[in-house]
Image (cartoon, rainbow, N blue to C red; front, top):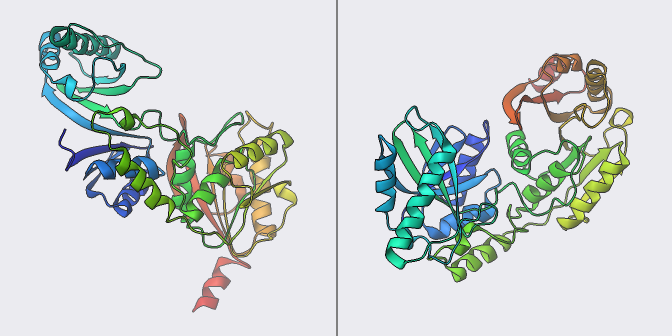
Length: 387
Protein backbone atom coordinates (compact mmCIF):
# COMPACT_ATOMS: atom_id res chain seq x y z
CA UNK A 1 0.00 0.00 0.00
CA UNK A 2 1.31 3.43 -0.94
CA UNK A 3 1.08 5.15 2.45
CA UNK A 4 2.28 8.56 1.27
CA UNK A 5 -0.82 9.57 -0.65
CA UNK A 6 -3.88 7.55 0.25
CA UNK A 7 -7.32 8.16 -1.18
CA UNK A 8 -9.48 8.24 1.95
CA UNK A 9 -13.28 7.90 1.99
CA UNK A 10 -15.06 9.05 5.13
CA UNK A 11 -18.70 8.13 5.65
CA UNK A 12 -21.17 10.30 7.55
CA UNK A 13 -24.92 10.94 7.90
CA UNK A 14 -27.06 12.80 5.37
CA UNK A 15 -26.89 16.54 6.05
CA UNK A 16 -23.52 16.45 7.84
CA UNK A 17 -21.31 16.26 4.73
CA UNK A 18 -20.27 19.95 4.82
CA UNK A 19 -19.58 19.79 8.58
CA UNK A 20 -17.35 16.76 8.03
CA UNK A 21 -15.57 18.43 5.09
CA UNK A 22 -14.81 21.47 7.30
CA UNK A 23 -13.45 19.15 10.01
CA UNK A 24 -11.24 17.29 7.52
CA UNK A 25 -9.85 20.55 6.11
CA UNK A 26 -9.12 21.80 9.62
CA UNK A 27 -7.28 18.55 10.41
CA UNK A 28 -5.13 18.97 7.29
CA UNK A 29 -6.79 16.88 4.56
CA UNK A 30 -6.05 17.74 0.92
CA UNK A 31 -8.28 17.53 -2.19
CA UNK A 32 -11.37 17.42 0.02
CA UNK A 33 -14.44 16.48 -2.02
CA UNK A 34 -18.03 16.37 -0.71
CA UNK A 35 -20.07 13.31 -1.76
CA UNK A 36 -23.48 11.93 -0.76
CA UNK A 37 -23.18 10.92 2.92
CA UNK A 38 -19.41 10.91 2.52
CA UNK A 39 -16.31 13.05 2.05
CA UNK A 40 -13.26 12.01 0.03
CA UNK A 41 -9.79 13.39 0.66
CA UNK A 42 -6.11 12.54 0.40
CA UNK A 43 -3.54 12.14 3.13
CA UNK A 44 -0.79 9.90 4.45
CA UNK A 45 -0.98 7.12 7.05
CA UNK A 46 -0.51 9.56 9.94
CA UNK A 47 -3.43 11.64 8.66
CA UNK A 48 -5.58 8.49 8.48
CA UNK A 49 -4.79 7.81 12.16
CA UNK A 50 -5.50 11.45 13.03
CA UNK A 51 -8.97 11.60 11.47
CA UNK A 52 -10.00 8.26 13.00
CA UNK A 53 -8.96 9.62 16.38
CA UNK A 54 -10.27 13.18 16.05
CA UNK A 55 -13.05 13.66 13.46
CA UNK A 56 -16.37 14.07 15.27
CA UNK A 57 -18.77 13.55 12.36
CA UNK A 58 -17.03 10.55 10.74
CA UNK A 59 -18.89 7.23 10.94
CA UNK A 60 -16.37 5.01 9.17
CA UNK A 61 -13.11 5.63 7.29
CA UNK A 62 -12.16 3.35 4.42
CA UNK A 63 -9.32 3.11 1.87
CA UNK A 64 -10.11 1.80 -1.64
CA UNK A 65 -7.48 -0.81 -2.61
CA UNK A 66 -8.92 -2.35 -5.79
CA UNK A 67 -11.31 -1.20 -8.51
CA UNK A 68 -12.33 -3.18 -11.59
CA UNK A 69 -15.30 -3.94 -13.87
CA UNK A 70 -17.02 -7.31 -13.79
CA UNK A 71 -19.83 -8.53 -16.03
CA UNK A 72 -20.28 -11.95 -14.46
CA UNK A 73 -19.41 -13.91 -11.33
CA UNK A 74 -16.46 -15.72 -12.96
CA UNK A 75 -14.68 -12.50 -13.86
CA UNK A 76 -15.47 -11.14 -10.38
CA UNK A 77 -13.89 -14.21 -8.75
CA UNK A 78 -10.86 -14.25 -11.09
CA UNK A 79 -10.01 -10.57 -10.48
CA UNK A 80 -10.17 -11.15 -6.73
CA UNK A 81 -8.18 -14.39 -6.83
CA UNK A 82 -5.38 -12.55 -8.70
CA UNK A 83 -5.14 -9.78 -6.10
CA UNK A 84 -2.19 -9.83 -3.59
CA UNK A 85 -4.26 -10.23 -0.39
CA UNK A 86 -1.16 -11.10 1.64
CA UNK A 87 -0.03 -7.46 1.37
CA UNK A 88 -3.01 -6.54 3.55
CA UNK A 89 -3.39 -9.49 5.92
CA UNK A 90 -1.68 -12.72 6.86
CA UNK A 91 -3.13 -16.23 6.93
CA UNK A 92 -3.42 -16.23 10.75
CA UNK A 93 -5.66 -13.17 10.81
CA UNK A 94 -9.44 -13.34 10.70
CA UNK A 95 -11.41 -11.24 8.23
CA UNK A 96 -14.95 -10.12 7.41
CA UNK A 97 -16.68 -8.50 4.44
CA UNK A 98 -19.37 -5.80 4.39
CA UNK A 99 -21.16 -5.67 1.04
CA UNK A 100 -23.30 -3.05 -0.68
CA UNK A 101 -24.63 -3.99 -4.12
CA UNK A 102 -26.56 -1.82 -6.59
CA UNK A 103 -26.58 -3.92 -9.73
CA UNK A 104 -28.86 -5.72 -12.17
CA UNK A 105 -26.13 -8.30 -12.84
CA UNK A 106 -25.32 -9.09 -9.22
CA UNK A 107 -28.49 -8.94 -7.21
CA UNK A 108 -27.55 -10.47 -3.84
CA UNK A 109 -24.99 -8.79 -1.62
CA UNK A 110 -24.71 -11.89 0.59
CA UNK A 111 -23.90 -14.12 -2.37
CA UNK A 112 -21.28 -11.66 -3.68
CA UNK A 113 -19.58 -11.37 -0.29
CA UNK A 114 -19.46 -15.20 -0.11
CA UNK A 115 -17.87 -15.25 -3.56
CA UNK A 116 -15.28 -12.68 -2.40
CA UNK A 117 -14.62 -14.70 0.78
CA UNK A 118 -13.98 -17.80 -1.37
CA UNK A 119 -11.55 -15.91 -3.62
CA UNK A 120 -9.55 -14.62 -0.62
CA UNK A 121 -9.51 -18.05 1.08
CA UNK A 122 -8.52 -19.78 -2.20
CA UNK A 123 -5.71 -17.26 -2.75
CA UNK A 124 -4.16 -18.15 0.62
CA UNK A 125 -4.81 -21.90 0.15
CA UNK A 126 -3.06 -21.80 -3.23
CA UNK A 127 -0.08 -19.78 -1.93
CA UNK A 128 0.30 -20.96 1.70
CA UNK A 129 -1.70 -24.22 1.77
CA UNK A 130 -3.88 -22.72 4.56
CA UNK A 131 -7.02 -20.65 4.65
CA UNK A 132 -7.65 -17.66 6.95
CA UNK A 133 -10.82 -17.79 9.09
CA UNK A 134 -13.82 -15.52 8.75
CA UNK A 135 -15.00 -13.76 11.93
CA UNK A 136 -18.09 -11.63 11.21
CA UNK A 137 -18.29 -10.22 14.75
CA UNK A 138 -14.76 -9.23 15.65
CA UNK A 139 -12.44 -9.59 12.64
CA UNK A 140 -8.79 -8.53 12.57
CA UNK A 141 -9.22 -7.17 9.05
CA UNK A 142 -12.44 -5.81 7.57
CA UNK A 143 -13.06 -5.32 3.85
CA UNK A 144 -15.87 -3.41 2.14
CA UNK A 145 -17.27 -4.64 -1.14
CA UNK A 146 -19.17 -2.05 -3.17
CA UNK A 147 -20.76 -2.91 -6.53
CA UNK A 148 -22.38 -0.19 -8.63
CA UNK A 149 -23.74 -1.87 -11.80
CA UNK A 150 -20.52 -3.49 -13.11
CA UNK A 151 -18.03 -1.34 -11.19
CA UNK A 152 -16.52 -3.21 -8.24
CA UNK A 153 -14.62 -1.38 -5.48
CA UNK A 154 -12.86 -3.18 -2.63
CA UNK A 155 -11.87 -1.07 0.37
CA UNK A 156 -10.05 -1.63 3.62
CA UNK A 157 -11.85 -0.50 6.78
CA UNK A 158 -9.49 1.55 8.96
CA UNK A 159 -11.97 2.17 11.82
CA UNK A 160 -13.43 -1.17 12.90
CA UNK A 161 -16.47 -0.49 15.07
CA UNK A 162 -18.44 2.52 13.74
CA UNK A 163 -16.98 5.77 15.05
CA UNK A 164 -20.18 6.82 16.82
CA UNK A 165 -19.21 4.19 19.42
CA UNK A 166 -17.13 6.64 21.42
CA UNK A 167 -16.79 4.41 24.47
CA UNK A 168 -18.46 6.65 27.06
CA UNK A 169 -22.07 5.53 26.67
CA UNK A 170 -22.71 3.01 29.41
CA UNK A 171 -26.45 3.69 29.70
CA UNK A 172 -28.93 4.68 27.04
CA UNK A 173 -32.51 5.79 26.98
CA UNK A 174 -35.35 4.47 24.82
CA UNK A 175 -34.54 6.79 21.92
CA UNK A 176 -30.89 7.81 22.27
CA UNK A 177 -29.30 10.29 19.89
CA UNK A 178 -26.39 8.89 17.88
CA UNK A 179 -23.12 10.53 19.00
CA UNK A 180 -22.07 11.50 15.45
CA UNK A 181 -25.48 13.07 14.79
CA UNK A 182 -25.31 14.92 18.14
CA UNK A 183 -21.87 16.35 17.34
CA UNK A 184 -22.98 17.30 13.83
CA UNK A 185 -26.02 19.13 15.21
CA UNK A 186 -23.83 21.08 17.65
CA UNK A 187 -21.44 22.09 14.87
CA UNK A 188 -24.33 23.09 12.57
CA UNK A 189 -25.66 25.21 15.44
CA UNK A 190 -22.28 26.94 15.70
CA UNK A 191 -21.40 25.71 19.22
CA UNK A 192 -17.69 26.40 19.75
CA UNK A 193 -17.41 26.35 23.52
CA UNK A 194 -17.73 30.11 23.94
CA UNK A 195 -20.50 30.96 26.39
CA UNK A 196 -22.86 28.50 28.09
CA UNK A 197 -24.87 25.54 26.87
CA UNK A 198 -28.23 24.09 27.90
CA UNK A 199 -29.99 20.90 26.83
CA UNK A 200 -33.41 21.28 28.51
CA UNK A 201 -34.53 17.69 27.75
CA UNK A 202 -31.19 15.94 28.06
CA UNK A 203 -32.16 12.26 28.25
CA UNK A 204 -29.03 10.13 28.67
CA UNK A 205 -26.74 13.12 28.09
CA UNK A 206 -25.25 12.61 24.62
CA UNK A 207 -25.59 16.26 23.50
CA UNK A 208 -24.10 17.45 26.80
CA UNK A 209 -21.04 15.19 26.50
CA UNK A 210 -20.46 16.02 22.84
CA UNK A 211 -20.83 19.75 23.65
CA UNK A 212 -18.19 19.42 26.38
CA UNK A 213 -15.85 17.53 24.05
CA UNK A 214 -16.12 20.33 21.47
CA UNK A 215 -15.68 23.02 24.14
CA UNK A 216 -12.49 21.38 25.44
CA UNK A 217 -11.25 20.24 22.00
CA UNK A 218 -11.10 16.65 23.26
CA UNK A 219 -10.49 14.12 20.46
CA UNK A 220 -13.72 12.29 19.57
CA UNK A 221 -12.16 8.85 20.21
CA UNK A 222 -10.19 9.61 23.37
CA UNK A 223 -12.01 6.72 25.14
CA UNK A 224 -11.77 4.17 22.30
CA UNK A 225 -9.60 1.14 22.94
CA UNK A 226 -9.14 -0.21 19.41
CA UNK A 227 -9.08 0.79 15.73
CA UNK A 228 -8.96 -1.66 12.80
CA UNK A 229 -5.77 -0.04 11.41
CA UNK A 230 -3.90 -1.35 14.49
CA UNK A 231 -4.15 -4.84 12.95
CA UNK A 232 -2.69 -3.78 9.59
CA UNK A 233 0.70 -5.07 8.47
CA UNK A 234 2.04 -1.51 8.15
CA UNK A 235 0.72 -0.25 11.52
CA UNK A 236 3.11 2.29 13.01
CA UNK A 237 2.50 2.34 16.76
CA UNK A 238 5.04 5.07 17.47
CA UNK A 239 3.41 7.37 14.90
CA UNK A 240 -0.07 6.74 16.37
CA UNK A 241 1.16 7.48 19.91
CA UNK A 242 2.71 10.77 18.71
CA UNK A 243 -0.56 11.78 17.02
CA UNK A 244 -2.55 10.99 20.17
CA UNK A 245 -0.16 12.98 22.36
CA UNK A 246 -0.27 15.95 19.99
CA UNK A 247 -4.09 15.97 20.00
CA UNK A 248 -4.29 15.57 23.81
CA UNK A 249 -1.84 18.45 24.30
CA UNK A 250 -4.30 20.71 22.46
CA UNK A 251 -7.07 20.15 25.04
CA UNK A 252 -8.36 23.47 26.37
CA UNK A 253 -9.83 24.54 29.67
CA UNK A 254 -13.54 25.40 29.44
CA UNK A 255 -14.78 28.23 31.63
CA UNK A 256 -18.48 28.27 30.73
CA UNK A 257 -21.26 26.01 31.98
CA UNK A 258 -22.88 23.00 30.32
CA UNK A 259 -26.21 22.14 31.93
CA UNK A 260 -28.85 19.47 31.29
CA UNK A 261 -32.45 19.35 32.54
CA UNK A 262 -34.84 16.40 32.50
CA UNK A 263 -37.98 15.49 34.42
CA UNK A 264 -37.29 11.75 34.31
CA UNK A 265 -35.12 10.55 37.25
CA UNK A 266 -34.21 7.33 35.42
CA UNK A 267 -32.86 9.31 32.46
CA UNK A 268 -30.94 11.70 34.73
CA UNK A 269 -29.34 8.72 36.40
CA UNK A 270 -28.32 7.32 32.98
CA UNK A 271 -26.91 10.75 32.04
CA UNK A 272 -24.86 10.87 35.27
CA UNK A 273 -23.38 7.40 34.59
CA UNK A 274 -22.40 8.44 31.04
CA UNK A 275 -20.98 11.78 32.21
CA UNK A 276 -18.84 9.95 34.78
CA UNK A 277 -17.66 7.47 32.11
CA UNK A 278 -16.62 10.49 30.01
CA UNK A 279 -14.86 12.00 33.06
CA UNK A 280 -16.94 15.16 32.69
CA UNK A 281 -18.46 15.53 36.19
CA UNK A 282 -16.57 18.81 36.71
CA UNK A 283 -17.77 20.26 33.41
CA UNK A 284 -21.41 19.12 33.07
CA UNK A 285 -24.22 19.65 35.54
CA UNK A 286 -27.55 17.80 35.28
CA UNK A 287 -30.61 18.47 37.35
CA UNK A 288 -34.23 17.44 37.65
CA UNK A 289 -36.09 20.36 36.19
CA UNK A 290 -39.20 20.76 34.06
CA UNK A 291 -38.16 22.98 31.15
CA UNK A 292 -41.69 24.44 31.04
CA UNK A 293 -41.22 25.84 34.58
CA UNK A 294 -37.72 27.16 33.91
CA UNK A 295 -36.23 30.58 33.28
CA UNK A 296 -32.96 31.58 31.65
CA UNK A 297 -30.16 31.40 34.21
CA UNK A 298 -27.02 31.45 32.05
CA UNK A 299 -25.81 34.40 29.92
CA UNK A 300 -24.91 34.16 27.04
CA UNK A 301 -26.72 30.91 26.24
CA UNK A 302 -27.01 28.43 23.39
CA UNK A 303 -29.68 25.75 23.64
CA UNK A 304 -29.74 22.54 21.57
CA UNK A 305 -32.12 19.67 22.26
CA UNK A 306 -33.94 16.62 20.98
CA UNK A 307 -37.50 16.67 22.39
CA UNK A 308 -38.59 13.18 23.51
CA UNK A 309 -40.73 11.17 21.12
CA UNK A 310 -43.68 9.15 22.35
CA UNK A 311 -41.33 6.22 23.02
CA UNK A 312 -40.02 7.98 26.09
CA UNK A 313 -42.80 10.17 27.45
CA UNK A 314 -46.51 10.08 26.64
CA UNK A 315 -47.08 13.49 25.10
CA UNK A 316 -49.85 15.26 23.29
CA UNK A 317 -47.64 16.54 20.50
CA UNK A 318 -49.46 19.77 19.63
CA UNK A 319 -49.84 20.86 23.24
CA UNK A 320 -46.24 19.84 23.98
CA UNK A 321 -44.80 21.97 21.15
CA UNK A 322 -47.05 24.91 22.06
CA UNK A 323 -45.53 24.74 25.58
CA UNK A 324 -42.02 24.74 24.10
CA UNK A 325 -42.88 27.93 22.18
CA UNK A 326 -44.42 29.58 25.25
CA UNK A 327 -41.35 28.74 27.37
CA UNK A 328 -39.04 30.12 24.66
CA UNK A 329 -40.98 33.40 24.52
CA UNK A 330 -41.56 33.89 28.24
CA UNK A 331 -38.44 32.40 29.83
CA UNK A 332 -35.58 32.66 27.35
CA UNK A 333 -35.14 36.17 25.89
CA UNK A 334 -32.01 36.78 23.75
CA UNK A 335 -31.35 33.08 23.30
CA UNK A 336 -30.42 31.00 20.28
CA UNK A 337 -32.26 27.67 20.44
CA UNK A 338 -32.01 24.69 18.12
CA UNK A 339 -34.12 21.56 18.21
CA UNK A 340 -34.49 18.44 16.09
CA UNK A 341 -37.90 16.94 15.42
CA UNK A 342 -39.59 14.47 13.10
CA UNK A 343 -43.08 15.82 13.83
CA UNK A 344 -43.24 18.45 11.13
CA UNK A 345 -46.91 19.25 11.73
CA UNK A 346 -46.95 19.54 15.52
CA UNK A 347 -43.79 21.70 15.53
CA UNK A 348 -45.81 24.51 13.88
CA UNK A 349 -47.57 24.96 17.25
CA UNK A 350 -44.37 26.49 18.64
CA UNK A 351 -45.71 29.75 17.25
CA UNK A 352 -42.33 31.11 16.20
CA UNK A 353 -40.92 31.09 12.71
CA UNK A 354 -37.65 29.15 12.58
CA UNK A 355 -34.79 31.23 11.14
CA UNK A 356 -33.12 28.08 9.75
CA UNK A 357 -34.28 24.56 8.86
CA UNK A 358 -31.86 21.74 8.05
CA UNK A 359 -32.96 18.29 6.87
CA UNK A 360 -31.36 15.46 8.88
CA UNK A 361 -32.21 11.86 9.70
CA UNK A 362 -32.39 10.44 13.21
CA UNK A 363 -32.11 6.74 12.44
CA UNK A 364 -34.72 6.21 9.71
CA UNK A 365 -36.83 9.19 10.82
CA UNK A 366 -36.68 12.19 8.51
CA UNK A 367 -36.25 15.25 10.74
CA UNK A 368 -35.75 19.00 10.63
CA UNK A 369 -33.11 20.68 12.74
CA UNK A 370 -34.59 24.12 13.44
CA UNK A 371 -33.10 27.34 14.74
CA UNK A 372 -35.19 29.80 16.76
CA UNK A 373 -33.91 33.23 17.69
CA UNK A 374 -35.61 34.78 20.69
CA UNK A 375 -35.28 38.53 21.08
CA UNK A 376 -36.64 40.70 23.86
CA UNK A 377 -39.65 42.39 22.35
CA UNK A 378 -40.33 41.79 18.69
CA UNK A 379 -37.84 41.21 15.93
CA UNK A 380 -38.92 44.48 14.34
CA UNK A 381 -38.02 46.50 17.45
CA UNK A 382 -34.73 44.63 17.71
CA UNK A 383 -33.85 45.50 14.12
CA UNK A 384 -34.74 49.18 14.67
CA UNK A 385 -32.44 49.29 17.70
CA UNK A 386 -29.56 47.91 15.65
CA UNK A 387 -29.80 50.70 13.04
